[in-house]
Length: 111
Image 1: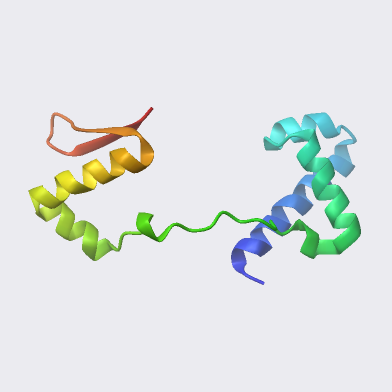
Image 2: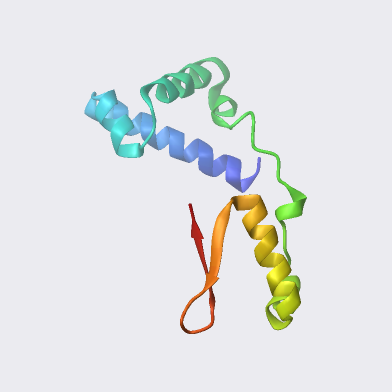
């Protein structure tokens, strides 16, 4: 089991523990920022499958196009033409505005 999966399990078990202690599921769901339907789905999966039911079954696939190594980023930042290309890529993927601020650093603001 991966570390990420173990963290998910621990988080969900903590939500269940708080719900059992307080008795107010709506308040706990609001506190943890989850919907009551999500809480009920987690509870049902835990009842049926145990801890393995608490692991997210449909993780988002990782997009290799969005992955940059630190060496790539250093090259991009040192080469102005590459920086412009990176900014255009970022805008296209995330529909964001990238503009230099007063100190000359690039600042990213998502819409």
